[in-house]
Image 1 (cartoon, one colour):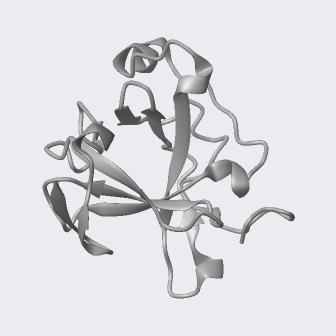
Image 2 (tube, one colour):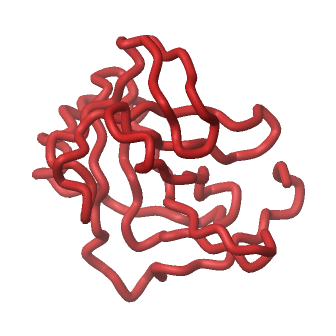
Length: 147
């Protein structure tokens, strides 16, 4: 099927690749179907694009490329919502706030986007220990990681 996107115009997607966010995203509760679109194999960024609304798309980053010790627990409620059975079923991403200069861009480490890649379920969660990770973490690649 074809969809219109915020950043890439019209693209072809496979219906089986749609990730369902049963609760939507904070501020976008009615948007429940998204697709992950890789930007480049050499950089840890991708797009989380609404399937129904071209204007709703977010740049996501693999947070461990920018903060190697990033770690958190997923609550039992969230584990149930995402139908998580094994740790390897889960991928975590951070929403990126892009600025004019890439060096000024930030990651939201406080509220990661969690995706069960096997069940195609997603949810943005707010970490309980909010003091540990900031809403705006500087997006500086770690030495030796993709830039």
